[in-house]
Length: 226
Ligand SMILES: C[S@@+](CC[C@H](N)C(=O)[O-])C[C@H]1O[C@@H](n2cnc3c(N)ncnc32)[C@H](O)[C@@H]1O
Image 1: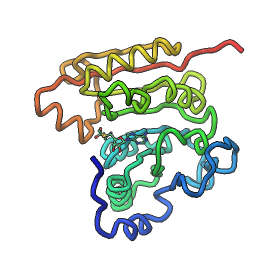
Image 2: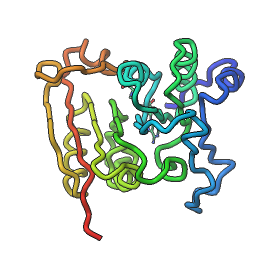
Image 3: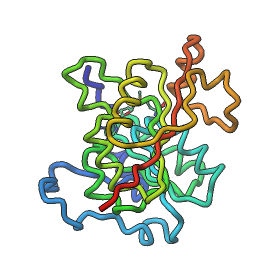
Image 4: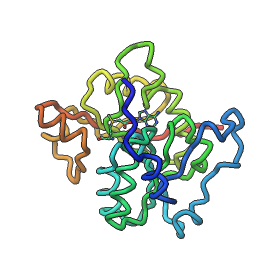
């Protein structure tokens, strides 16, 4: 289902200024994986703090809380839907949070923007499950996406995933394992585990209020011999 375009969306996006970086399909040739679009972190954030990514950030509740709790990082939050990223960016500006920027566009283009080997961690929170088999390649833990994440993550980097969807969780475990990623801290019921410091996302609140268990894992970037 296509989301209805919010009123005054373009004006609101424009008013967010540098808070939103547009990975625009129209203006770019994504078949050429050159360095033309690579983000200059120093110019964007004014410092060299290490980078953490969230992909599919929705309205940004998670990333805003994380940025406050862990100010030693800079955050890039990726979201393809303008309708929701605009809320995230407006709240970030209103709260005066300086260490987040939003990337509007699909995760499939990230390796044109995020510098190779620059990210410490990637968060995937309640990614769309795309239950139809024919849409499996859209799932954010499909092996094609894992290849992109591997390019962006530093050696020793990790992906932290949470979902309410058991099928997506099983699919993710299989994709990580078959792509050579190690897994640790796997939980089948996060809210009844001894995990400390969880930041509840918008979707997580909704699902857990319905009594659904939350699945969580940490995946470690493979060490490849050249
Ligand atoms: C179910 S929502 C979860 C939002 C938020 N992470 C949370 O936990 O509340 C998934 C979000 O991922 C975004 N998304 C899906 N596929 C994407 C892609 N390929 N690139 C960027 N964002 C994507 C959707 O637009 C949606 O906002």
